[in-house]
Image (tube, rainbow, N blue to C red):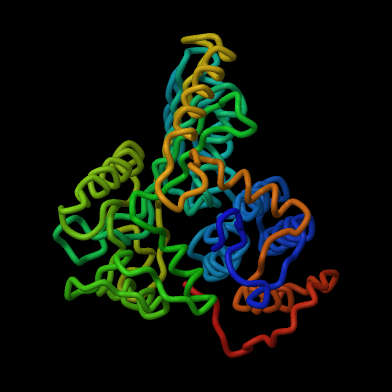
Length: 388
């Protein structure tokens, strides 16, 4: 990737599709497989927002994953929320094994509403599923004058420090807050060096993983992306925690943060944890039963919002203006690359890889959504089954 270029791969590797078309297609696919229209719009918005921010690993390329899980009955298309506990500052919800996106958007809004009344609000959600980019929900809080924090557990992917076995999910701990810059400060990051979704993206486009991202069962770095995904299913490969393999680069820090997110997500909600989140038991697909947590802190309850934004902005300008390393031309702050990617992609849309193009066409054909003409020049593999 060139400096200042936020496109993921060379133009010949994919086709650009405008965001309006993508959002309508995502919505229509969800509706066709039973997701209520209001929820379908939320799912589509979360997926397309990811691509708008240049986070291709969690964008529209994830459509087949949700499609497959619903079709095989692993998760429900409808999201019936049960409120188990509701207090002035906290709440615990159950998502009924429905779509993670709509329940998460509603939960974060509920946390924000509680924060506006009490200074701080927190809502936890159990019996849920993958909810897209965690930053979507933290940014909701930042847009409403709050500090937003959210996290979720996920399929076992990370090996604890000194282990080679995938136990913890990639478990993002995401924070966003308003500033006087043109965009919010937003740290939307997994507690592993990379995410499973990035490995999936590399597998789709035929690119090797970076050495150090993954450890195999023998303790060696693995780079073959498709092979990594197969071995992770067999517990023969795992993502490394932030810091990397062992303790020399403080891999235990990422391991500990991932564990904290697992505790917050699973123990407060009584959801599945560690390898119980695999989604497969005795050779059969089963619900993931994931947990999420959403925290909002109302800045005005502590300090004037504009004063906070100005001071934060000044701090960030000093960081961005620090002496640069040789060969470096820019110091970024959290959320800046996503903002720049959004500006670049505004008139182009999202890059759709050849593998994702095939998936789109397969879904389009199965659901009879003939009104879409993407112009993809790929053939559908009719023998292929929806991926895990």
